[in-house]
Image (cartoon, rainbow, N blue to C red; front, side, top):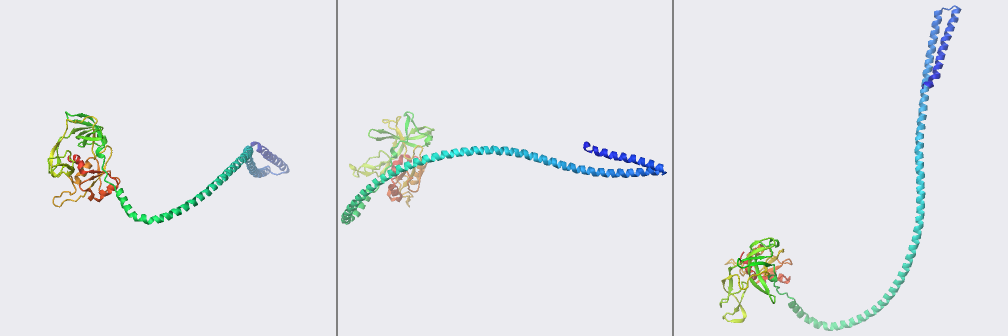
Length: 427
C-alpha cells in the first residue's frame, strides 16, 4: 500500500513546496513594488492554506478512488479464486467421468460377450427342446394309438358285460320276490348272531408285580412294586402261582405295610372272613366269590348246581404251609394297575329299600362303598358309560341298568361284585 501512495505523496509535496516558494517569490516582488511585507506574507499564507485544503480534498478524493479500485481488485481476486476452485472441481469430475466412461465401455463389452454366449446357449437349448418334444410327441402318439385300441376292446367287453348284466337282471327280478319273503327272517337271524355277549374282564388274571422275597417265619413278603408305581400302605394284593395248563392257584392275600419307591413290604393276611354256606348241607364255599353249591336241596351231590343261600359261616383265611409263598409268585389287584388309572362304572340299580334302607341291587356292599374302595386304590368311578370306561363292576341283576347294556354293546369287560369281596372287606 505504501508503494502505491508514494507517487501521490511526492506529487502533493511537490505542489506544496512549489506554492511555498512561489509565495515567497510573489512576496518579494510585492515588496519591491512598495507593498507592505506583512500584508503580502499574510496573503501568501492564506493562498497556501487554501491550496493545502484543496490538495487535501483532492487527496481524500484520490483515497476514495483508491478504495474503490482496491474493492474492485478484491472482487476480481475472489472471482478468480472461485473460478480456480471450480476449475479444480471440474477437473476432478472430468477425471471421474473419464473413469466411468472407461468402466461403462468395459461393461458394454462384457454385456456384448454375455449376449453372444446367451444367444449360443439359447440356440443349443432350443434345439435340445425341439428334439425332446419330437421324441415325446412320437411316444405320446404311440401310446394314444395303443390306448385307443385298448379302449375299443374295453368298449366291446363292456357291451358284452351289459348284455350279461341284462340277462342277470332278468334272473334277479324273477328271484327277488322269493328273497324278499326271506328277508325278515334273515334280519332276525342276523340280529341274534351279532348280539354281543357279556365280556368277562381278564384283569383278575393279569399280574401287577411279583414276589422278590418271602420269609414265612416272620411273615414278611416283599413285592417289586412301590410308591413309584402308585402303591400305598394298606393296599391289598392277591398272591398266586401259575401251574401247568395255565391254571391259576391262589395262595392268599397280602397287605402292604411299608411302601418304598421301588418295592413294598407286605404281610400275609390271617383273618376271619364270611364264606357263603349251603342251607341244605354242610358245604361251605372255598372262596368268598363262590355263589353255587355242588349239592341240591335234597342234600345230594348232583351234576347241576344250586345257589348258596345259607347263613355265611366265618372262616379263617390264612396261610397254607403246604403251598408256601415263594420268590417269583405273582401278585395282582383288579382295582389297581402300576402307573395307570382305571375308570369304572358300577352297574346296578342304586335304589334303596324303604324298610331296611339297603341298596336293592347290592350283594354285600353298596355302590358307594365300592366307589370309596376304587378311589382308595387310585381308580376313578363315573356315572355314565362311554368308550373311556375300562371296566364295569356288576352288582346283583345288572341287566336292570340300561347303562350296563350300553356298556355290553361297547364291549366294555365286566367284573362282578363277588369277585372283589377280598379287596373290599377291609375298607
